[in-house]
Image (cartoon, rainbow, N blue to C red; front, side, top):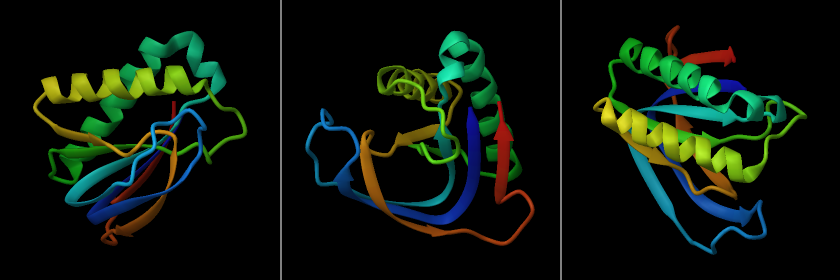
Length: 136
């Protein structure tokens, strides 16, 4: 798994094009303030250790949220950090499980529309913990 974490003063998106043919057709637009955005790339090798990868990802997101003094986390599927891609079904399962676990820990959690390319608007401050990368 590759995990690019960006703390954003403002993070907005609008659905653009389907990336997965079987994705439900939606037209959605959202804007979040003071949020930690996890750009998550789930790789094929991660499928063998789904539980472990999920736990490590959650720990990284919680750590980064504390460092940026936010309790708002956005999970965004970003399959552009590696040539290897995990199955869409397991990726979505990971996102849903991580969302539930983070909410149970007191975080406000949202997911961007899964299976879509999005028009993104990211406004991030220039401090050391605002941009982090982790390979799990």
